[in-house]
Length: 462
Image (cartoon, rainbow, N blue to C red; front, top):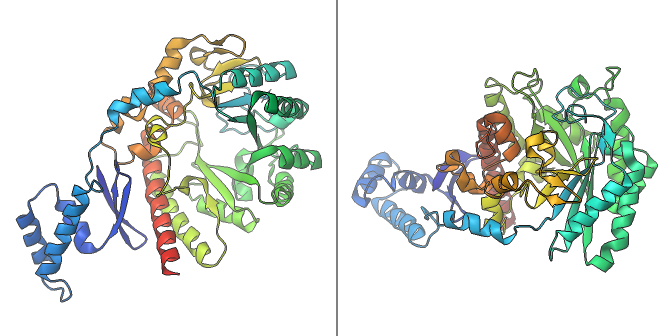
């Protein structure tokens, strides 16, 4: 499957199944557009007619270009067949029963009252609670016992607001470190926080123990304080920004992300990214809101062209800052065109419900944090393991080829079929597709590939 587009001054041709990315001139771009519809003589005649007035493009040039396109096809780099569908189930069977990551919901409570929160202000449609050390310890033991030969294990401390149960977080990390050597494992921890309870103790601990931290900031003060308020309705921007600046400065280059949410209130989210940059942050993520249909913060069809334009302008800003020697990272534009995800990941996606699970304060297992509180998706618990085999089977079968709407999409081996939770909440099925999200993903991918092309060509010119 071939996808062609023009962006950033480049004519870009993607061959989805081979992973080929081609930057071509106008003649080649036009030939590829017609290649599957017309024969050689018809294409060359059409090109001769179109480019007749171009003194620097001869009939021989066009014929040579056509032959080069044919050579790419014959070498499997253009219009390559999709040979992966038969692998989908088999590849997932290879990791069946092996868990590599847990999202520990150490606090189903929060000190902010964000109206767009998918987790109902941390309660997940249930009761407020915090995880005990005993439950957390059992969760870590469950992960080790079900991780097979995997050495690196991922654990995310999540909420609600996990720092409302910080003592248990510290105890769990100490326990994990105590058993690493004996079990032959390496725990990599991530802490996700709204920043309200960040202090020197938190900073020192996280910078020593956490492989990554995710810091919630929505950008501009007026945007952030519109939603991210405490229970008295007061905005949190002024309180958290200085803490985050100190946090990041003292991480000394260790991983972090400033994670923002954009909504109907700020489809022009590039202004929020610029605010983050002005504050000194360079590892950035801005996510489209996840909310119930009809929610005031929901992105609308009228917002869509604005958002798509913002992604293009973001790509331009990244390249401009590269040239100025002030680069920054945008999470959704991180792509490796030479050694990216293996075909298993490109088919199967995030592994929710199979390789990755969320654990509630009571020890219940769910496919991921976005399903927590929806009883029919409860998989089991950390003492008895997965007992709801039919639901896990649904997730085990949840690959890009299980989604009929993905079949003819050029981006399917980049998104792996997308987010199962977004699909379910949009369509009622984990094998559906969240079509609005698809529009955003395709544009992000186009922009990410263009940025990588520009960076690669710039390096080659140096």
